[in-house]
Amino acid sequence: MRSKTLALLSTALLLTLPVSGRAQSNHAQSGGPSSKSPSSLTLPQRTLPPKAISVDGRYLAGRVAEADHDYEVGAHELDLALAQTPDDPTLLYAAFRMHMYAGHLDASVRLAPKVLATKPGDGFANLVLTVEQVKRGDYRMAEQQLGRIGAENQLGPLREFVVAWLKAGEKDFAAAREILSRLKPKEGDRSEAPSLIIRAQIDELAGDRAAAEAKYRRAVELDPAGLRIAVAAAEGLRRLGKTGDAHALLQSYGEKYSDSVVMDGMLAANAPAPKPPTPASGIAEIMFDIGGILGADQRNERADLALIFEQLAVDLKPDLDFAWLMIAGLDEQFGKNAKAIAALGKIGASSPLYWQARLRAATLAAQEDNLDEAVRRLRAMAAEKPDRIDAALTLADLLRTKERYKDAVAAYDMAILRIKQPEEKHWPVYFGRGICLERIKQWPRAEADMKKALELSPDQPYVLNYLGYSWIDQGMHLDEGMKMLKRATELRPDDGAITDSVGWAYYRLGQYDEAVKWLERASEQKGDDATVVEHLGDAYWHVGRLREARFEWQRAVNQKPDKDRLPVLEDKLANGLNATNDKPTVYEKSAEKNKGG
Image: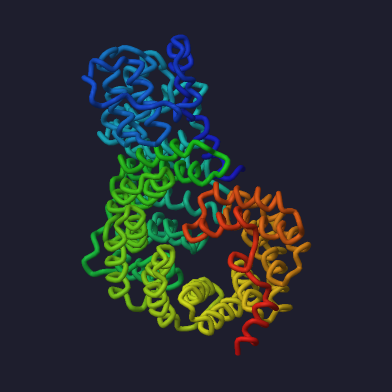
């Protein structure tokens, strides 16, 4: 039998929303922009009276908002268009879709019957009404609604899982179990664990406590690393009166996977009692799974579809923290950091995801120009849990990206002091601090950290690149430094920054012909980088290709280089390379140093 994830992915893809045809019909006929490039459109001026904007204008404004993932604005614009032409089927469907993206499921429910009047088999319109019936507890009507989904949108395994929960809601447990038995994966396989959780929850609803307990325990045995499995099983065991076993399970999981989860909230004496399973909560988990599969599939460009499933999940189960974390990730992917922060704020304090959500929210706050607030939060978190390194490390990485290197070193110091036994996973901590130390001219400490990072993980290309180049740039360990750079290129042959380092190292060694070869390759790989292009121009000058050198320098100027490089580039364009704007070879530098001494 095919695995559930692949089957559910196929199911989700069958639900793909069709691109609205309005821009290809009415608007195309009127000479308007093509629907294939909504981002090229401009929003109507907000200062105009509402009636001054045509239906077409509102529609196009909604399409622009959709392309920008600004679903709130898109829904508003399409609602205004519908107010002028309330029976237009294309506008109705576009507004229905936009409200689903925005999480306005009440609005989608109101529009769904009108959508079904012209598209009776539409998958999402029937699904949103099914969800509404589930919320009301009318499981029989929900099953009937689900059955109206057209043949072109067959839900496959998703429909069967949903029907199983609906049968359980109707107290027809025999039918629910029969359906689940047909969907059961290979016995003993890790993929059986999620199915066991569903079957255990339905056993709970049926009052078969012994069968439920056995299935919860078996699910954990099959998938001991699955966080959702551990949480669901622990909640089930608590409901069944096995609180000690539930706590032992959570504590063991938290200790083993302490880098990613914090179980304090679930283990606290005042932790809220787990809610009993319901068809709504069970179907919410199925919606979450579909959204997660769609969001993780790199081939699928419709991440907005993943958002729809996650919105349905939290509509059915508002405290489904895994779905809120997924929604936050999608919002961040769409460039909507404020919305991502709001979604992270929905994750409860007792959730094992709460600590992770706070870390991410602080980082996003910094991206929203609230750096001081982000630093305050992260410092407070680091003090709150002095045995953990993640808050201190997140703070250090954030300060490094903001070029506050001295403050970053202090944060890295804090993180490293909390490492009891350095392991391979800790190499980025030492590398990050090494970068900051090098930037504040503390090379001996920086070199020691780089070496420590390589001791922990010898084949890290970026560490090899940084340390190898730094040695050559300073005229020390030349052979070993070049070996490191060559090894880095073997590990990352298509990385333009690393290729540039090798070329520039040859330049500093005075081997200009070899430098040109490497820097030309670096330019092919990373030709939009002003530093790479400038390096190539310098190498061309030294091999007598003066016109090409000036061409590359002009390219570098056009690529908005760092402010301190612009006058240097302008001097090169005007005067060529000379003693004031060229970097001497390591040998010349050493000779000058000895002469000066």
